[in-house]
Image (cartoon, rainbow, N blue to C red; front, side, top):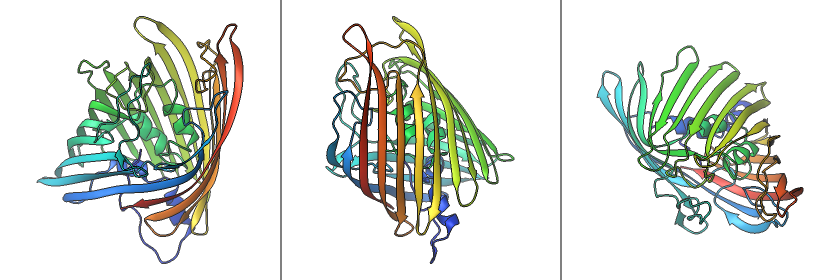
Length: 386
């Protein structure tokens, strides 16, 4: 899941500083920023990656990698329109409509419906974003509709692998096949973003239930000064099925995440520390705590950058055993990704990525035993922004 606009500045030569900027993935900036000038803007990103992939939700005891073409290695392909109208006095009206797409097949969305026991509907057409709002430089911004969750924004804005949900350890451990509910985008939501004051900004989100579970709430605060940036996000999800297909847990959850980054120029370092609490359901409450952390690096070199990331999720609480064929991660999951991202122009890049996934799962039948599994994914891809 990502947003991308023309945020690059063309240069005749490729400096380390320019390449370091790309390490942000630019996705978080565009998630938070509509068109800066009045009018309507068409934007998007097309990506194709070919390689061998294990399941993004985690390897299990019988997992085998498969060869395929994917529309999401470093980002998920998408397109959209956004607009801004000047209302006078500094105020503006804003909107955005954007949709995921699978360019390897031409289908919309990221995935089709997931059957029981998950029971997650397929992505609606504008499941990436569909909101309208008002903004003012002194008062901040209010948006209403389907909006990126603050926790996902916190993850991708301080991450060498940006918004990748295929190779970023942090995003895989937190959002894909994890105990977290809520996914990366919340429908039926209202979000307030404060103006920036002395490097500090904040956001508050509320997603109404509308007879679909919930409500959900979230807050985020971020601070930036020079080479240093940090942020903290917290959310509470009362299992809202209106969140989309990457939020597959059927349970209520609460989560927090602290992020920090520092640009040592040329090396930039990113880190996260967080927690997911699985609270079960009203009829079967529980309290299982998962700790999540990661460290990622981006090192500019030539017309590109080297990328590396490592992350882990584990719990010391008792978790229910599952069949050996179920994706791992109940007890622990560890991910390591390395690669190189090469920029052909300000909009087009090619990359090579390699990832190692390791899980430990408490399995059935009784007595429960812990089974380890591992798998390797790699891909060669191209990403183009427009």
